[in-house]
Figure 1: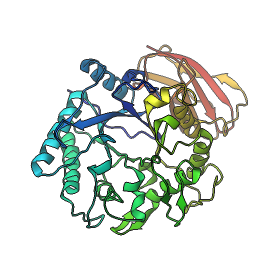
Figure 2 (figure 1 turned 180 degrees about the horizontal axis):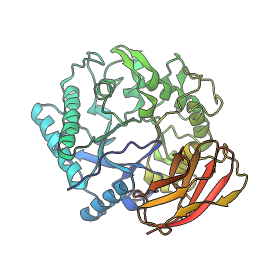
Figure 3 (figure 1 turned 120 degrees about the vertical axis):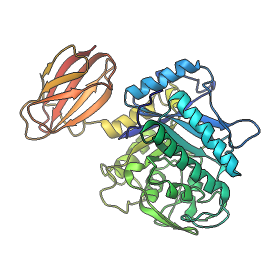
Figure 4 (figure 1 turned 30 degrees about the horizontal axis):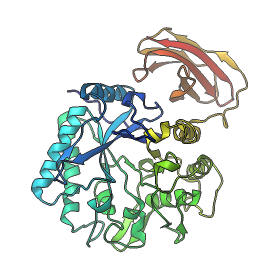
Amino acid sequence: MSLTSARPQSPALVGYWHNWNDFSAPYIELDQVDPRYNVVEVAFAEPAPGTTYDMQFAPSLTAPATFIAQVAAHQALGRNVLISIGGANATVQLNSDAERDQFVASMMDIITTYGFDGIDIDLEGSSVSTTGGTIAAPIDAPLIRLIDAITTIMADYRAQFNAKLFLTMAPETAFVQGGQGAFGGIWGAYLPIIDALRDSLDILQVQLYNSGSMYGIDGGIYTQGTADFIISQTEAVIQGFSTGGGSFAGLQPEHVAVALPACASAAGGGHTDTATVRAAMEYLLGEGPQPGSYALVQPGGYPDLRGMMTWSINWDAVSACDGSYSYAENFERIFDDFSTVVPTIGSTTMAVGPNPFVEMLTITLPASNGGFVLRWLDATGRAVRIDRVQALGTIDMETSSLRSGVYVLELSGISGQLWRARVIKE
C-alpha cells in the first residue's frame, strides 16, 4: 500500500465525521463531505469490548473497500484524513507495557488498513488523569505509556512510509486551561501529553464547548459561548500559563485551532452564533476590533493562527443548523474572503493555456506593482483553492490536487483589478 504523506493545511478547517447514523445528524458518505473541510477526522477508533487498549475501527455503513477509496480520494485532493482515538464514550487506558504494545500494534493496523495519514487524540472522562508529578515529569504510568505509545506510532509510521504522521489533539478545557485553577485528576491532565509531544503536534484544538467557565491568563473568568471565551482560551494555549504542576510553555499559533460546535444541537453547551465567532476570530487574527472585555496580550493578534475545528461535519451538514454547512461558510468568510480588501474595479480576460489542460496550466500574469491572489472557483462558485503569486510574466501552475471539471480563475491584484478565465481540467 502507498500512502501520501501528511500535508500542512493552512488555514485548516478541521471537522469530525461520525461513523454512525444519528436521526438528527445522519451518516453521510465520506466522499460527500463539503470540500472546505481539508482535515477530516474520522470518529472513532475505540477499544474492543472488555479492553481499554486493543483498538478497533470499521466503517459502519460503507463497504471497507469503498471507504478506503474515499480516504485516498480526499488525500489526492490535498486533504488529510485522520483516525480519531477515543471520544466521549470510550475509555482508553494503558495499564501495562503489554497493553501499550497492543495499543500501538492495533492502531498501526487501523492506519495502514484504511490509509489514514494521521491520528487525533480525543481522550475524555477517566482516560486521562494525573495524581502528581509535573507537566515536564509526569509520574502516572498510564499517562507515560500513552506518550510512549504515540511516540512509537509516529516513529513506526515514518519508518514504514517515509513521512510524518499528522497529529492533532482535541482535549476538553478542564484538561488544559483548567490547569490554571488546579493540577490533579482531570485538571491540567493533558498538559504533560501536549508538552511531551509538542515537536510532533500539528494542531491543538481544545474543545471550547461543554466546558463551563474558565480562567484566562489575565486572571478573569470567562463563560463559554462568548467572544471573550474564544479569545481568552485560545490565547492561553499560545502564551502559556502557570499551574500547580509547573509552567506550561505555549504553542506557536500555527499549531492552534479554535474548536466549536457546528450548531446548538451538536453540544451540551458552548455553541456560539456565527457573528460572534467571526468577531472573535478576526480579533484573534489581528483583523478586527476587540469584541468584548478580554484584551489580547499580544498587540496585533495572531495572523498565523492555524484555523478552526468543529464537532461535527455531520451536524454542519444539517440544514436546521443555521443552514447547511454554515460553519464551513463562516470559516471561508473569516479566512478566505478577499471582498473586503480587494475591491473589484473591473474584470478582463487573462491568458491561460493549454485549455483544456491535464496537469500543468500556464498563466500569463498582467503587469502589476505587487503580487496577486488567484482563486479557483468550481462549478458552484466555491473557492476550492487559493494561491498567492508574486512572480511576473508567465507561471506554470501544478494542478494535481484539483478534480477534473470546469473552473473559473479569478486573479486579483493590489490595485483592485480583476482578471478572469474559464478553464477545463481533463
